[in-house]
Image (cartoon, rainbow, N blue to C red; front, side):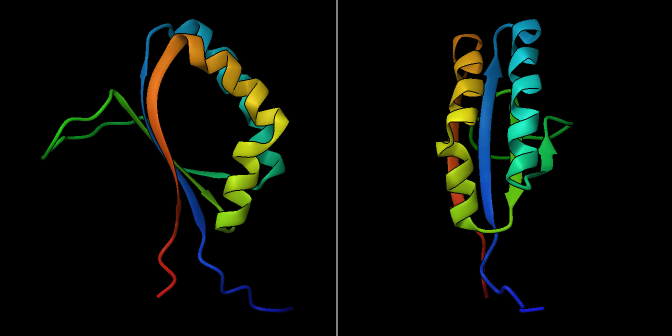
Length: 102
């Protein structure tokens, strides 16, 4: 089996949710998409202490096998359909980041 040494890809999002009941529709819709792309949640809300700067209420970090897969998931029609459920009920900042390959 070949060793795939490409760095992983990550979605890093900071989100304020304005309507958690409707946001749950987004959560339900994104599950199958994330499964299709092999996504793994590393951080999904949870307790925290902000030590510097300002952040939104929720932080989410999702890991993908590589940067290209992370981008492909976001760009997929299935994820964009799920995102359309999220947009009216939340505000956020999101980046797709290539992991450290060193």
